[in-house]
View (spheres, rainbow, N blue to C red):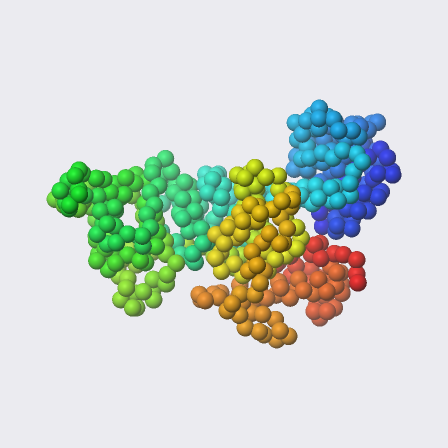
Amino acid sequence: MPAVLFVDDEPGITEPYGTALRDDGLDVVTTNSSLEALELLRRRAFDVVVSDISMRELNGVELLKEAKTFAPDTIFIMITGYASTETAIDALQHGAYDYLTKPIQVAELRHVVRNAVAASALKRDVAVLKKDVDALHSQKLFQALHRNRIVGKSPKMFEVFRTIGTVAGSDSTVLITGESGTGKELVARALHEASPRSERPFVSINCGAFPETLLESELFGYMKGAFTGAGSNRQGLFESANGGTIFLDEIGEMTPAMQVKLLRVLQERKLRPLGGTAQVAIDVRVVAATNRDLKDAIAKGLFREDLYYRITVITLRVPALRERLEDVVLLAFHFLRLYAAKSGKRIYGISTEALRRLESCAWPGNVRELENTIERAVALETTDMIQAERLAETVGAAPPHSAVGPAGFQLILPDQPFELEALLAQMERFIICQALEKSAGNQTAAAEYLRLTKPSLRHKIQTLGIDASRFRRAAP
């Protein structure tokens, strides 16, 4: 449960507003002494501090500055008794997250604190990722993930991060697999930027976007007069990427004849431009990607087996979004910040109902679909928080390929092969959320409903990454 410390000289302020925040499922501690607040901050961790600026013992800015010396990650929201721009700017310059002016509106307080709690959670997630990356001795990897906006805290994504960190230093060919929209090119770029080749070019080409003859000239270049219109020599993408990385996206769409030519280049590390006679040596790391089952393509005679083994020295699978649902909220807030900044809109949060719909969606289009959904919502939103009605009608709706299981529970059956364990985890998460909804967030009642012990239910909630606090409300 997120912990909030509310400090103000006036008991008439701390008690009613503290009660309002408790109703939001927060662990709220109140005090009317800034010195006591400082001692409380030394003894335990708080996610958020709501503090008056004008107080007798220590003023709010002094409390903030002192607390930051030993609790740098605690977020401060300041309260001022009058609309003073200078006071607010002073507080913000010393690290305050936001400020409120008296008289405080309960709805505004809840909104600002809710966003601060979300920001605190994101800070912790980043800290966990940094710690995990530091364990791999790869600050460069963290920077590559950050620059390429690869976001995730799920075990499956940490496995992707670890694989990138492990193989980035080698020159081995890598095949990245995964469904469309999962971010395979972003992973390829991160792999390049975390490697010793990062100062050299990263060149990308979609192999399915060109006919065979044009793809050959794009990859290997051509000499003047090689074909009609070739008025001068042109360097191919392999030569352009020399010393760096070439990314062959959708390699499964390459024709068999083109596969033979690519295989020769990968084996010999030399190429011959179209219309040329001399071979050119290349020093390029090859990273390929596909959303197709290449083994199935081999069986059907559509992909060469020898090329398959040449490009699968290392295989890195990017999970579908439905396999890492615990990342949905993190990604949603990430895209919200990105597109709110681009559009110049002051949108700070996502409503509870909108979050529920986002978490319940199967996301057949994966991260790309989620990104487009948030971009659309930001464009349409007229308030300072994304509302459920701004989401597309398909978000949160049952997917078309589904079957009804026991007690009417819908089993999401994707078109592509899937991992049974991931689907079972999704079912268990859905059922537990429904039980918490029925019990108004009362875990004891939810455990009885599910015929579980309370410790067992608590363990499942933690393992599945469920935010149980959002179900708390007055029992019907």
